Length: 205
Image (cartoon, rainbow, N blue to C red; front, side, top):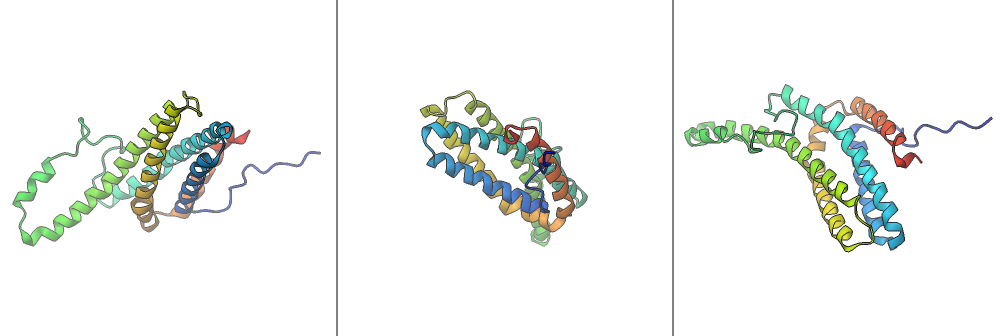
């Protein structure tokens, strides 16, 4: 009788922040492997990287970002819908800025708090925007030959976008999540979803 293969080798308990940081570390490692690989191996490494980024983005967009945004909402922060849109033209509503001229020194501290809250809400919007850019770059890269100069140029652009997004997330969103969310419970939910997506991806082959 054949031995049963464990569903996932990554099912050790991790909180949401640890899980995302582990993903970030893996993505950085794959970028390094791509640069060190021979031309014949670059295509397969790039494909694995694209799949890892796809799964990571889905888990964040389906579970992590909504949890952070919901917490910001409950704290009274003004979040921008589902994080995808701010106003119809994609700009921050300028009406809130017009009140600055009317605020005197006695209300400066309150203004600082409001600015901080607005900055927090914009972080989520920016994260969704970064994901959208990364998805677009991956879609273009999938159509190119990994040995071509066009691929290398676009891949470098993807790397810059991903690393910048990772840095912003680890400096702003993850500390906020660690302080405000039940990251243990959220992490278990995220891990189950990640395992499910991984089992359906080429990584399971």
